[in-house]
Image (cartoon, rainbow, N blue to C red; front, top):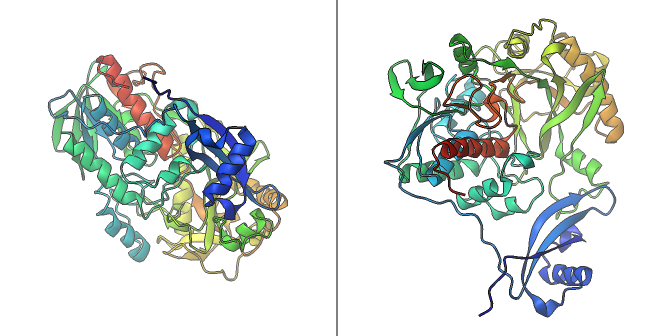
Length: 527
């Protein structure tokens, strides 16, 4: 009997956009490139797909995985559902990607996850988002940042990560497919689900946790912690009820400022952390397509183009962040007296606008108010900018805006092209609203970006301020081996809010890693 070997061969080829669906052509190209006999091939698939737009014509680079006869095609990593209703309990605060993936991994490990989410379920959140856009009313517990699925659910769903060394990226992506995502996310170099599709996937994840015997509680906000010496003992929810837990995964996201204040009040160590702040810029998508595709923007086989920009300006990095082709700018404030922008794209990325954060890297020591012992110096700076922008735009959820060249030249914009930002924009000289250390570097960077991408520097592009929630401005320090807080046993700072992730996938992986650390402690882990 011949045993199948879990092996395959990877072959890299290129193809024009219109050739991607021609499997006969692609297979012949693989055979020619690899010297593998066509008759020996049992199966093949596109393993990775990326656009090479450096030259004209624009091509796709494809990594093709080939299985010969006698080689076994490894299936997707399934989510393993088992009954954990009587298992050891762990508390998970937050149902964003870190919290949800922690809950799923806990089920795999035979541990019962009990998830507490301050916001509403993913469907109910929509009504509060509508109130922000239409009525300028911010619900501090249910908004674009807080609620089931976290910030990523209604602000794009990009799955790209550079955090390859932090954990199993493929497993995290395969779980998304397991719960309903398009398998193309396993192939694309920059995978994206889309805000229109994520809610259904998030719901399926939650239902799996509950089916396994786990618990998910909405409108349940962490309001206090109880320690027994240097160990976790209990948590208080909604300032009403206490629950005993020896292990707590704190996955509250980058905007849960009350958690930072709570930890500080309880004398649990936190630190100021570098972050980034700037503006969100909006171009016409057809312009970005024309720039990036060298005039081939009418090719129906090409997706909406993206870009990535970075420049060192006066000792600080200025770079594009969360670029959204065919996207929309969204209001992401978590309090009434602030404005915040973010961007998202539907799965088809078919809106006429392109937007991206353009932000300046800031270290705590860059700020005038910096004191080494102050954990809130970056958070206070972030809050000040958001409130100043709120006041400058009329104390509503409208945002201060300015055309790009007008900003660089210090001119007030007299009018604007149509914006995707639904609450509306107000003409403001952003040089007078943004701190000088931000505005000065942005002015220089935009000119440099225009030299890199011909046509990018245009007065038809509009800046919306501020883009301020790029990452947490506070770090909750943890031991690099146990992943527990450096001072509190059983407390596991996790994901973006703790300073250990920078997007959906890296946060999801960090959630998995925290559960693995707990399971290992109790010798309960399964691969």
